[in-house]
Picture 1 (cartoon, helix red, strand yellow):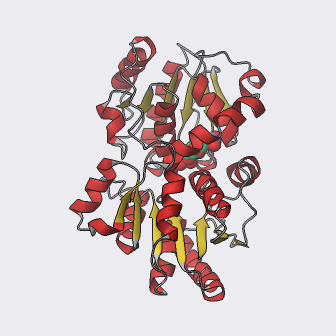
Picture 2: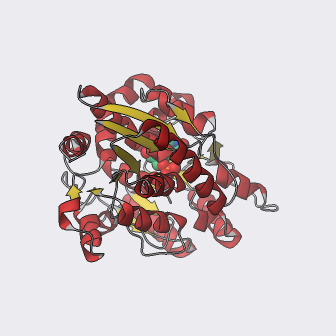
Length: 362
Ligand code: UDP
């Protein structure tokens, strides 16, 4: 079986790393790796290939920038050319970026079956570009790998045939387990930054709804200023957020907010594991906070990972100053909620995905 994997953005490299490893381990499958180029900086792309032992892409389309339509359209044309050349039996796409949608659409138009890893996630906020990408990809896909029972329920509610849905758990849980020892052995980030265990708040911010709205961005930075009065804040800054912050005139930041370049996955694992609290608008980081048993505040108005809110590990705080400071104080001093090991599968999702792919009719 010939599988063509489409990746393009940071979280996709991490998800694909564990699935690709499993796929390549089985003798009866060949993988072709296509990188759209959506993320291209060394610290947003190359570092993941190197650290996570992902093979070099067979195709690099080098497409980034421009509006959503232009970017997705150029990817669609580029991916179609590769599909015509390679004629894979299956196309594998991940998550919810423009690369995901372009991969799915290019394939179904050529009647090549599509498998979607992380199917069924919903924020029910159609203003998010990611939500549109998810819904359209799920409805184009032939095989839907859902990470959680909530995601499975969303797919069933939307009329997706139950036979096409496979609840396999979350490949990010596989990655967290698989790379945990490597991170401990190879990352020196805690010493390098002079941090102590539970002695800082880790923050990531990059959602368009936060970066593209100056009022929200300012409110969020003011909240971080207040947080830094309690503990230093470590902020590996996404390029989109850096650009947005450069356009803000004269916001002064507490010197205890340490802005650093985006870090590789192994450094990120160590920063997450040792943080006192994680403040984020990332989907993946919300879950990783839970995997490492660190309380999380989500600076959005909703989340796709609702089970974390239900079990008390994640609080949705938006950008409201009072809600933020109350929730932060509670996360820093309250006793940790119960931790369940079964919310995201058993850490064997990649193996289940490959079993299902290899046994699917071609
Ligand atoms: N991540 C990383 N370095 C960073 C910030 C995040 O390796 O400086 C990892 C993080 O551990 C998680 C993934 O990137 O595995 C999440 O990606 P991102 O937040 O960009 O996207 P989302 O999950 O929101 O789609």
